Image (cartoon, rainbow, N blue to C red; front, top):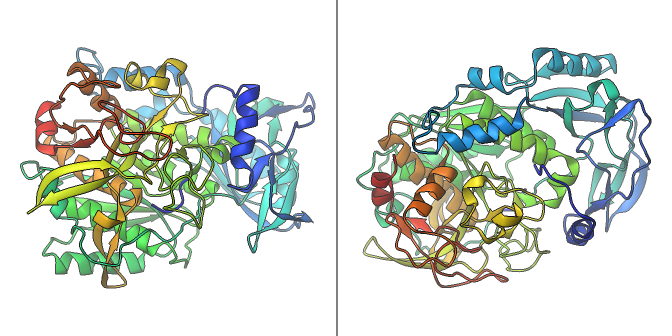
Length: 558
């Protein structure tokens, strides 16, 4: 995988210290220190002060510098939304298998129209332009200058030189007028920090698997090939090279041409630096589910948290793709501090309530979180998990080393660079209770599942028209999405959000942490490790519930 990217409870003082250590020299940020008490006229948000480290201060950011802002809106009845997601996966509940439409969600759980209008009017009053309320009323986006943003959110924005580039960061907390207190969750775009993409590990010899071979290896041949089901990929930049490579792969592998839709969630960018990532996402997922109704790319302008939040929210507000995948992420501490964790979690919760499943890579640095250029090197970062995989509303996909013979599954071990561990800042979903050791402390455990990720057993992908062997959890996440798409297709799209469905079934069959029970449909990976953690019987911090025997699992789920 490339570099990786809410918490509804608070850090204790010890956790704050640990988070600061994790950030230092890794993400290049630390919390900006204790903020001055806000005036009575102001209310706090989840966007905290940042102070880049290993960076040269350049002084105050020029006041005319343009910013793209994404302002999060608090939903109504958040507890009720979480309870609904659990009931939707609980057999016997009146809500079992009953998923919301985007209109249903907006009516029941989104911020009110009055609240959204009040926030939009405030931004406009501060001189901002392009002020737009998202259809699901979870975000308001706007174009602003540094001067306008500083005035509107009672903050300070500075410039820094770090790793040869100029970055911006808000050096004090972002606040809103007291009249909007509780309505605004966070303000993204005051900082230009976010995920970065590093070269995906690849092997020199082409001895891996073509994507369509995973259908046989993971025993998915009796399931529908994605018919009438839409997939989605979170991407960035110029997708023309990726779509061209997808068409080449389809011709070379004798696959049908999957209709492609590109949805730009901000100004178009010419950047093609992530083309190999999007090649891997698109060719793997559709190679496994070749008859998919369509593939939608939700294309961000950049890999900043503000721009990515728009794409994740659009995936939810559209509600058309039953499955989505993000082969990117970052150490949990940054999205916790800048507020994107709160904002993105709400959007992903909407998707879950609508029966959508969002898959995300856990990272390629083992039980530490990713930092370029050491991506793919176990323990090269600080101990932490990665977001958005750590969201309770995402399926975190870890990595394995896969052995297959004559196209048939033989075994897997935990890949030594696959991400996993306990998030220091995210809560776990109720479905992890009794399975994940940290569930008693309401901490999210990762991964949920794991699939082939070792570059030595990776996928053969066309990059710039040439077959290239690529691994990492950037492979395992779209692979999981493609296999789940086959199961969704076989069940006419009624399986819903995967995580509670998988855990509920797993527990019902006797599975759990250190369990030796054989759960039909799962390959329990019991060998290997990712640094701090080792694979064990049952759920573990290297491969979660394991990988799937898709035919068996699909037959067991309902």
